[in-house]
Length: 238
Image (cartoon, rainbow, N blue to C red; front, side, top):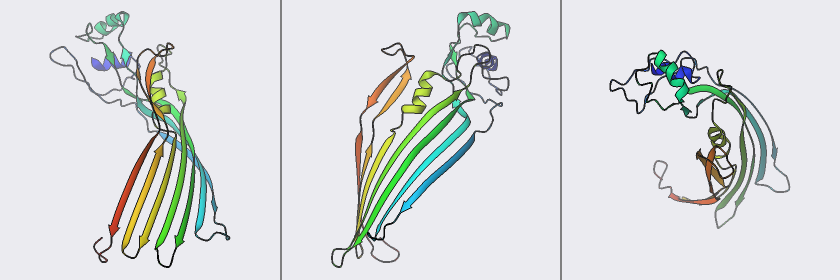
């Protein structure tokens, strides 16, 4: 019966076995969509390496990547059961047709394209009395965009919600910078790392200030620092 609910909401006819709650009240239930197909991806990448003769110990790389994923599997937004759908659910034999409020399901719902740039520069400098310094500076810009959204065959509405689209596109920081300094002198090694993450937003269902079907909260950029100290006692212990 619950499978009939999901089917009526666009989940497909092959949802697997979803049993009814004997109490006639469903707080949560889960089942599989046997109509799911594997995700497919196409990717390409281009890059360059720079190692100048006039600056020994220095190297830099620049890479651009582009990844397209088709038929991505995701959870749909909450599909609210309307009153005009309840007679249909009753005709399908759903015992608690009058109290079911909403359903969600997994489906091949959308396509995305992720593209970005990685820039990494490193410099290794050895001294006679102060050890070896190895400095690395890395920059990454990464952006994901939803380029296709499947439509409900009955209603023509997008299968995944605007909230879910915004989550996919904006929840992770698009920019990251990492500065790493590794100093070694004999058996002693000290590593320091500073990570900078750009701003990002978190989205949820609701009514936005300008009438959007989602609400969001913005978070500013942040620094994260790491410090590691090690001493190599012998070949087996550090």
